[in-house]
Amino acid sequence: MTQEQKVNRGTIIIFILSIVLVFTLCGAATLAYFAGKQGSNITLIMGGPVRVSMVNNNYEETKGSGSLVMNLKANRTTLVPGIGIDMQAIAKLTSSDINSTPALLRAILDIGVTGISASLGKDVELMIRNEMNYYLTLRRDSTEDRPRDGWVLFDDGNYYYCSQNKQYDPVTNQEYITLKAIDTNAEGNNIPFINGTFQFPRKMYTNTYANVDITFKLTFQAIQDKLVNDDGDRIPNTIFNVKQVLDNVDWTIHNN
Image 1: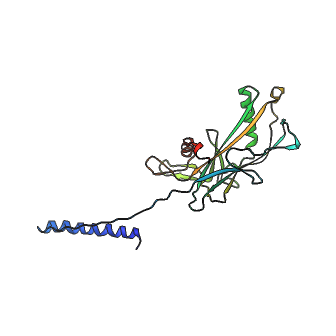
Image 2: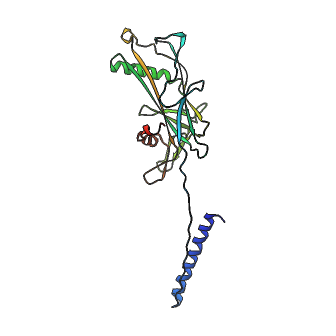
């Protein structure tokens, strides 16, 4: 008999005896006493740690703070309008095999433009992002051709790795996109962010943009699946819920 069956059986027995006791008191002056006891020991085990690193298209891994090689096409060392920029960046998620846990993933892409005014720099950044979008592994809805799990750009300017399938909320009567729970193990699960050659935009560039420095900084952040509210109840893996958790993590203590 399992522990759950024992617990259920003990509950039923105590319930029946209570009824007998009530009938006894109502039917006669004789008092009868009944007692019961149920005990168990339960060990709760924390899930294994989730770690994230970065690899390129050759699956060369970079851990912690580091740089991935980004190639300029046509054997150039200087960035010019229309040139091809070859960029590969893949998130590698790992955890222990003993008690592995699924993970949720976010990517933060910063494009820094220095050497010109802030407003012109913002224009450059937006043009670059528009060109890169063609090669990002973006999510496709299950109703579209060739649906897939992939990245969704949220209002905060960051990317969240989401499922192609939507979830239905019976309370609000709405469908919503949820983050994909990514399986992890010691070997690692590779999630591509960008893998291709995008063209540096040609538009608007004049001598004003000469000698401008452009820096790409990509950060991957991962947390265990299973989001809960203040009462410990499970809540959906919506982008807003995941964002709240990720924004409040002290990442300096998780990068060892």
